[in-house]
Length: 138
Length: 138
Length: 138
Length: 138
Image 1 (cartoon, chains in turn brown, yellow, purple, red):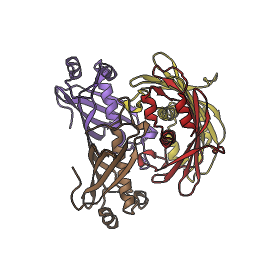
Image 2: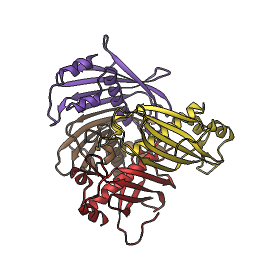
Image 3: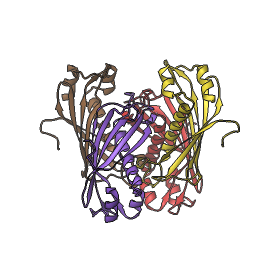
Image 4: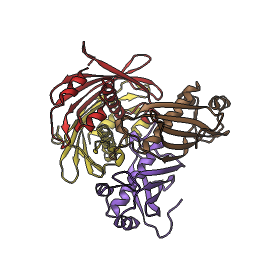
């Protein structure tokens, strides 16, 4: 589940927001799924390919599958780092991998992956445009 | 801030979700704003006028102002009741009032109001269609 | 991924909230994870065993793993049904299974599962108290 | 509603997350309330006074009132800036003011304020500790 050799990964850092905690005093598990989503946004931005632009051009990459493993909790105010890379890129789908760590200590908090299928405006499965596939690969 | 005489109010009840709590052990204050929104949805549904239908017909009622007063906290699993009514209905705007109570004890937890402006698809201020205004008044 | 024979499942129904949609016009994928959590809450309540009570007695069942498969989108105002059952119950862990359907059409929208580890107040792995294990099995 | 002269204000910037948008294609109004909360967190951090520390010392500053005015929408991927300052500091309460702008254009998107009451661990109204009041004033 770690970043394969030769693969470009991006890392986005932010503080845990109060609203992301729950009554257990730690970050609610659902929010990691949104952090993954935000890391994908950064991935595209870093490659000079804004995902908002992708949608404006008539394509979507909705999430078809998500899985997360929770190893250690994060707390309000913690600085966390979310690492994101492409695990598998096919003509009509892409799999992203993720690692969330505590930014200061480097402790691994969570790992995960998401699988995405490319859809057109009619929500039919379609090929990821070539320019985008090249751009995503880094 | 209570329901004016002769005014129709609806009440929607649900349990507090775990994800809605925060590290203070109670419901995070931001979620009441979403509960108000859900109460408005019920208000329209109860009047036989689904807000989704309103948007499909080319109109929006985005929130222009919101205010909330927090009196007592709600906890995970609490059954809460959100009361919602129209405080003021004008040609291009509408103000909703809200009261959140603990469903069992009747204790008042939160009060609030939201003001909405009617927009068309071009996001220009426009008149609320007559049929909808009549429907909303109940 | 469907409910095994002889297994008790509960179903909780609610309307999709506006705040749960995103700019794709459908429910954001992260919220299904919270819906699963709410279904677990109902599961405990239906068995006469409130999870809030479980935590007050000094135990937690944090999520160790979650996986979701997204088949069809849900939209604002849709009435959805979340089915929840115990897939595996061990001395220190439990796996819940889930199915989200469109309540009217019965169409399957999402499936998933979550694995939970029992922790005590010191956040050490511990045995699920016998009374709770019996209660959960239904 | 703008920052009074001689008053210290902090500004925190971030990108709009996809999960923060809704089916209207813009940021759901409830999330601004969470952005205000995050700006308060930054305010304390910038003053060398972490709010998490405040809670660990046995005090809370729950929100007693919130109000927001929505002027222009924000969209997925927009870089937004949230400005936060103390409007009023009393012995047992504090009022924060906020302005959300589009970070690039400087356009004003939203204004708001929140009022907080100081509580102790027993949830009784109490005086804000002197060291904290001095620290907050900047």
